Length: 156
Image (cartoon, rainbow, N blue to C red; front, top):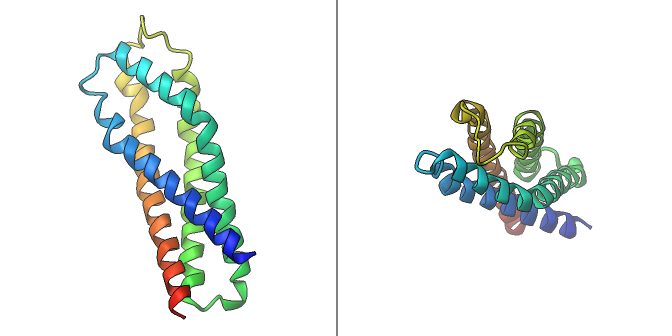
């Protein structure tokens, strides 16, 4: 059972971290160079794809990490337990921030008309980018913590 939980946690966390990093390193840098209409079109296309995928990955990462920690609870004094617990906390923060900031902005994004973009597009989108940067760092840290926890387990 713990092997399956570890695999689910590591794969989902790694994929989420990779997608967040790819977006941050690429798409996030496009806003300043794209005109507002093109930016809206790009983000709407991206949103249609990832709105289905990201909840599965984030919930899979969170549930996998939490279950991994629960299965390790009898070894709560080990580094593996605390690394996995930290990864779980990071994924909980990602979920909370996503629901509080990114999802409401994404819902507004899908109502915007690319032919008539909001006059304050940069101001409206800025909170999304700030939270996304934090989510990216947290997801990378969570993935690294799980990878190290798995390595520690293999060494013991």
